[in-house]
Amino acid sequence: MSVWSTIAVAIERVAATLGDLMTDRDTAFTTGVVALSAKMAVADGIVSRIEVDAFRRVFRIAPGEEAR
Image (cartoon, rainbow, N blue to C red; front, side):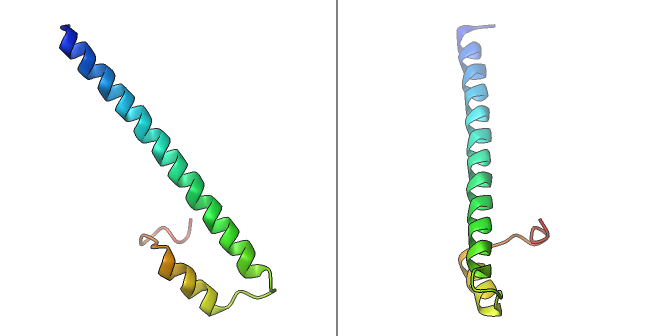
């Protein structure tokens, strides 16, 4: 394997690892925001339709992902 091929493979591995880390961070952040939003909505006792609609305006949820 040439030096350039070795460098290319190394760059691909680093890029894949960074991509995985960013995905993990995005998932952790999104989970935290959803959990905090739910706790804040329940704080007054009842979650209103207005609170649900406000959350959906700020955060776009992909079709099929709401159940998760």
